[in-house]
Amino acid sequence: MVRIREIKIGLDDDESIVRQKAAKALKIDLSEISDLEIFKRSIYVKNSEIYFVYTIDLSLSRDEKRLVESLSNDKVTYLERYKYVLPESKRKSNLRPIVVGFGPAGMFAGLLLARCGARPLVIERGRDIDKRTEDVNAFWTTRQLDTRSNIQYGEGGAGTFSDGKLTTGIKDSRCRFILEEFMQHGAPEDILVNSKPHIGTDNLKKIVKNIRQEIISLGGEVLFETKLSDIIVANNYIHGIKVEDKNGLKSDIETDALIISIGHSARDTLEVLKAHGINMMQKPFSVGARIEHPQEYINERRYGKYAGHPKLPAADYKMACHPPHGRGAYTFCMCPGGVVVSATSDEGHVVTNGMSEYSRNMENANAAVLVGVEPEDFPSDDVLAGFDLQAEIEKKAFVMAGSDYSAPAQLVGDFLDKKKSDHLGCVKPSFTTGVKMSDISLCLPAKVTNTMRDALYKMDKEIAGFAMHDAILTAPETRSSSPVRVLRDEFFQSNIRGLFPCGEGAGYAGGIVSAAVDGVKCAEALLSNES
Image 1 (cartoon, rainbow, N blue to C red):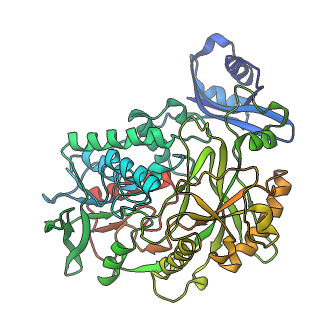
Image 2: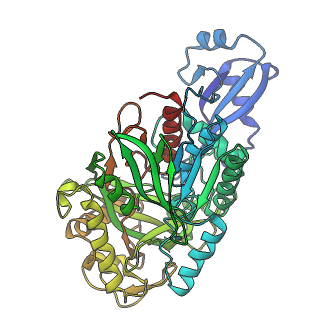
């Protein structure tokens, strides 16, 4: 197969000219191209220049490798077509492996184990996606929180109520496998070619159900509303787990292989691991707020005169800066045409996150503006002290916004001027349980708010008007990643043998794809039967 990078076409060009440009780059006749597949498509936006950039894969009717060698073109390479191959299962035990948590890491660990004949048992403290969706909508409407079933807990994990972004910074061939599996289970085909693929929360709800059904069809089992209450350890090996169902009924389940993929909010489960002496360490995470602008405003700032062009999607952005005092700030999980959602899993806490559907057609654009928080900022040396910092911020936000799950919000202009907001401007906040205009610096650490102010001024230079006075900041954003890492060795196991810390909650991932990849890697390690 021949891959060609950086084929550029204009907004108004027909995509069919990609084939012509490919033939020209290879110095061959069009008739020699037997098959053409788009591998990646991106939009180049800079100043007043906008065009599409393609990476394509070709099959030719001549010796492909020899042709590539003759060209000496660094944008043309020869490679074998990628295909993920299921690992050989060397597992000797007759006991079923158990996966705790059914977010991206747990789903893909369970899927791989099921395809390899291991008949995994998956337990999830939350509810299935249909009931979970009802619970989340009920919370947003009535403000009655269900601590078992919410945006953090339940089938699909926290990412199900998000934009469904499939971008990742990791370089791992398994990423392609993850994208292909999402597509096979119902995601739009364009996730395989778009440089910034996303599924949307509406599609994710169908996809996670399809993955669950395949696991069950292959002999696996998925138990919802089943919470891990303890692990059973003897001679430094896993021997089983203790669980509690929705009725409070407790039981023991025997196993010698346990994948812990609990997500970034399950402090109570981490307390269980800590009590058994499982090695963990504090980990930096980030804190900040969600910023909202009208999507049309962002389109104009990003696309200029091309805003509204039918081939252009809702505009996005990604920015990072390092102010003079050295603490980094960046935008995270930008949701074009989305909403800011109430995402707590704990009573008396306020947490924000962003969400959008596949169409990204809502009125506002939103993104987190985050600042890195280091372990030296944590309130103690306890390995779980990062959760204490999160809780302190979230509880302050809850009280200052009226103790009814409204969130504190502030106009960007007032935030920069260090004064409380008492009214809205032209931007209508979308936060799903409502906002109370206030001063968000009263719930966020001073180091965070000072850095955010510096960052907003710098980001305004990159996107003119980003720091517009009437843009809305809704706080706090505290759950972007886990504040702890559960240590593991080269066999992906903790110091308790047979226990595999996995995914975002264990500190090894930062998004849907990286978590799913880590789930696959942990399942591969389990099947390899290395001790």
